[in-house]
Length: 263
Image (cartoon, rainbow, N blue to C red; front, side, top):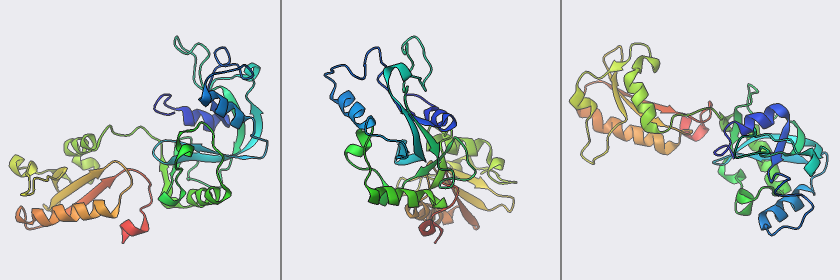
């Protein structure tokens, strides 16, 4: 629920826990309820035992660390919110805790509260597992996820990111030397704003210290072969603009490039 409570995963990492909501004043754990979601969540959380393994699911097919359960503190009297109290959240939120010991051997290095793993397609959660508060994961999927956490190509960070690819390209256009020493904006505004015959346009056009035209394409997430091919297409279209030309793909996501992208 990072979109509702920014920094939630970092809190869980540092406090060695995962947690669910339903504050006890409105949602007593033993009282009758008409909420099917609360019924399902409390039934599931009561099945969790010490030494079970917990995978924390984040947004967009990411996960945090995998943890081993050391205590289950979900009773009303044990409520300890991981989201601070405020005028709207009188009891805070996400306070029924499952205390864990995070497995720091499997997952991103360096170890950090902002570190996370982007699950490859074969390891991603599907169906109800994506929507439920708590779901049991099959041993087969748990194994696929564990394998994914050990692959550096899947390591990334939950850091404050640019709002859009447009913001990234605007930043590079304003501060090209941050991309590479000697880089500067292309001096011809008409060329900088050039639209190709098929109505596509590059994100940024620069000049490097060798006076070569540099086509920059910006992507928020981890790069894909399609992104590389898109940049190649721009380079081909831009040949008429300058005798010497090169391209740079600026990307977010994992620090290590996938093998298919590298090839």
